[in-house]
Image (cartoon, rainbow, N blue to C red; front, top):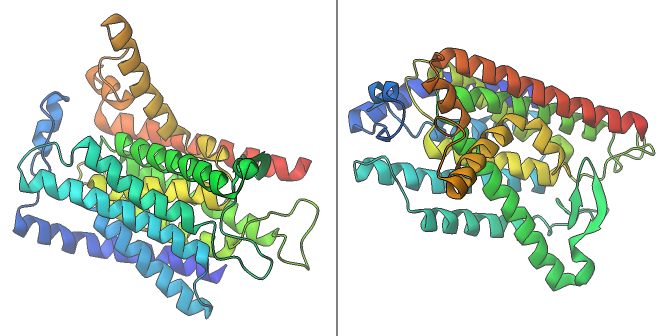
Length: 360
């Protein structure tokens, strides 16, 4: 537990104190955000605000994890390192996207094709590696079974090793792409995605701690409802570092934002959420814990689908938070109310997680 607290505390301090230094660096280099012309007109005043703040979130997370590992006096585990790999890898894709926007002086970065290619490469490498590195009990960081709160009987390896690996890679990459883009879509108002991410990863800290205390590998405390998760304690440490880093960054990202996380932060946080759902065997439960992100994506899908079918729009603008902006809601009002929704979804997910353990 001490390592979890250290990870969160160090990451929060690094993010809180390091962000203003990074802001000054970006201002000197004139690395500012470009605003889409078809968006709410109130956003035009944000043009030139420093972006790529996700660099600080990633750096603070790594610092928190390193400090916690040193304090705990134990080497890093495969699950934690693989989760960090996915976060940093997708953060790099987002960084290239942000840098393209800045260097070409436009609101669009990498083309959709190259963005998908970048996410795919990182996702495929992660998907293959999480089925490697068995421990003494021959458990790998992930399994080929689709999971809800635990692994289910739906095993993607039913058709054989090679085909099973291929199907798992497709499934894992679907989750990685979906969650990274969901957080990216949510990152449209000052502090919205950052605050929601803090709530979601805070919930996952509790999930991982509980799985560590009730783990099947612990022969002393293992019971009939134990969890078949490879390195839950390490996952708790990484997730605590992410939550701490996001919380510290929120001080500077809240309205009026002094810096945006950009695609660097959005893709990194979304990838980390996907990775946590895979490594903690809670792939479907994540839909509840990260419910706000799901709602935002659904609003975008409805808008696009309905417009293609009828030529009309359901919302004034998608994603959903922009709809309320155009209805006249204040930005801070929207963000706070959406934070409340994010917190309720995270609490609901935790409730379902605990209820399953009690029933089991």
